[in-house]
Amino acid sequence: MTALQQQGAAAKAAAYVLATAGTARKNKALEAIADILAQRQAQWLAANAEDVAAAKAAGMRPAMLDRLTLTPERIAGIVDGVRQVTALPDPIGRVDKMETRPNGLIIGRRRVPLGVIAIIFEARPNVTVDAAALCLKSGNVCILRGGKEAIRSNRCAAELMREALRLAGLPEDCISLVQDTSHETAGELMHLDGYVDVLIPRGGSGLIRAVAREASVPVIRTGEGVCHLYIDNEADLDMGAKILFNAKCSRPSVCNAVECVLVQEDAAPAFWKRALPLLDEKGVELRCDEKALALLGPRALPAAESDWDAEYDDYILAVRTVKDLDEAVSFINAHSTGHSEAIVTCNYFKAQRFLDAVDAAAVYVNASTRFTDGGEFGLGAEIGISTQKMHARGPMGLEELTSCKYVIYGEGQIR
Image 1 (cartoon, one colour):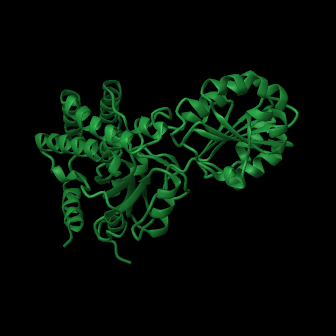
Image 2 (cartoon, rainbow, N blue to C red):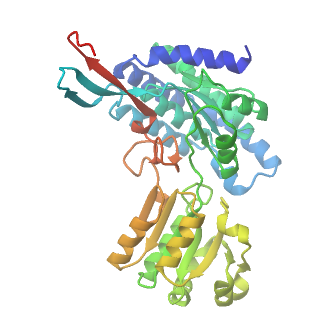
Image 3 (spheres, rainbow, N blue to C red):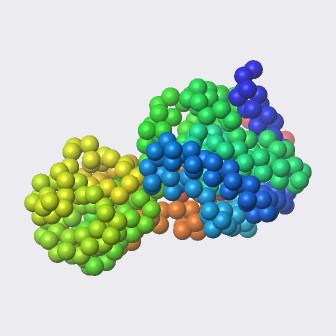
């Protein structure tokens, strides 16, 4: 067996234990994880500082460097997130429905864990803890494979969480980290049939598409975020400018950030008078179609065809001028990754048309796409934003990390 197969076998064995551990034992383990991460944060920060220094030396972009960096405040947020997961209702064992058939059989549908969840993600050490906590509470074992940029941070976090599991009396292999960050191990993990029940990639579109294309284990696609904002000619333009600034600039490297703004042509001159001063605060680069370019002049750059499908993860914004709502909807459905889309309008009927016609996991009226998040949706932490339509869609919390089994009670019935 390879090292990864051995890791998979250990995870599978732990999964049988965790599936029947019960809520109290899982919560005890989560509390132990929160405590150890808080008490020994200096150790985690030191490991992260080495990752950050190496990333800076390698020329990592500032937006990505921000995703990699831990601070005491961010660790406090991560720890608080673990405690929030601890307090959430346990979905495992819940019976969704129960009915008695004419033949006397009592048939129920019960929530059960998926089993072993492998997660491939990039340079975000918070994902290591968020994913582990959600998997643990939902009765799933996780195999974590982060990017090389965060390997020291991830190793430290995984070691601390495994220590907490031992203290709580659960198998340490309920959480494990792939130590080798080479492409070969990522490829092997995608084909770890018999050990991995589902694989969840978290990262840029290149990673997600590669995993979906190459994996032989079941995959849940998450996080591809080419999100759009449409400014209607019946919009509150001050509101629209503020929403655009938040959706693009509050954290441009995340998947729920807007990458393209569509502006109705009659509203464009007045809208850009309001929006440009805000975007200039962050030096946002505008890549525009011909109409927007004529309006914005030397402040903007001409857009290439590839800009309409780009996930920039940076202070760059694609700008397109449209005739009306129908053109905006058609464009969004042609170029969206199915993550989050928004309209700003004061017209109720246009808002309803947008909600009905746009095909995405989250569709907004007069609000920023940055709200597409498990915590903001009241789910607690999330393991990712699913952009597909099966098995889950949108922010994936505890409920989305379960499957079901049918349980049947009889009194000797035969068919």
